[in-house]
Length: 302
Ligand code: AMP
Image (cartoon, rainbow, N blue to C red; front, side):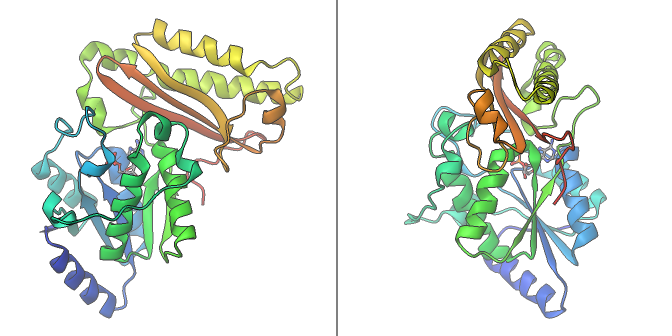
């Protein structure tokens, strides 16, 4: 049986009982409307921890006005069934006023790792993410918390927050789960019309091609490799494949998230992060590739 907890008080009491029995606590924070990406995080936590808590909270303070907060997909009954069949026993689903009661005013300010990519397109987004994740960590006090590589910048920003603020939780990186045609699973894929859904895998195709080009260019020490030109051609591929526009497509260091603007920058990068966000119809999709320049994939490894 899965237990749905809606108050912070009950969550804290339940966690206290679990901790008294000496079990470790794994935690998977989500915004719900589960897909196999979420389920994989839950399964990994269940495998590695004594008890697992999954939270569902569509966090209003990480959405800017005009974004999709109101229409974000929600279906608690479906989520309960999916989480229960994955073996989850505790779902924490607080309401907005439980998390942000009247008078709430404190925010965590994410640093420079949050300034580019989604941080540039969505001002305040990562402050909102850090604030809610810090609150959830304080409530659940997990030993380990599971985050997807699908949201790579978010993962890195949260790792940095836990390091900077001496949070005791261990952040576990989990590989991106994809549909058969390569599209990264996302609750937002439910927004796509059948036609948009058919076109959406182009994002992953562009990332794969660019990854290959970078690995190949590495063999000749990036001599003659023009990042700008490569990015432009992949952006054109995306708009030619049914995307309405590209928010960003950038190459960066996977460690510092500093953008690599030319071959010289790339030479000093060991692990690459190719970050992409693009619009298809009204939907903004993000995806990325993270890889070592010696070709060894780092996805999903601690
Ligand atoms: P969300 O509900 O979209 O906020 O995501 C909750 C957690 O699931 C975050 O750590 C995400 O990075 C992770 N996640 C979302 N989509 C995927 C996916 N396709 N594969 C792996 N993890 C994912």
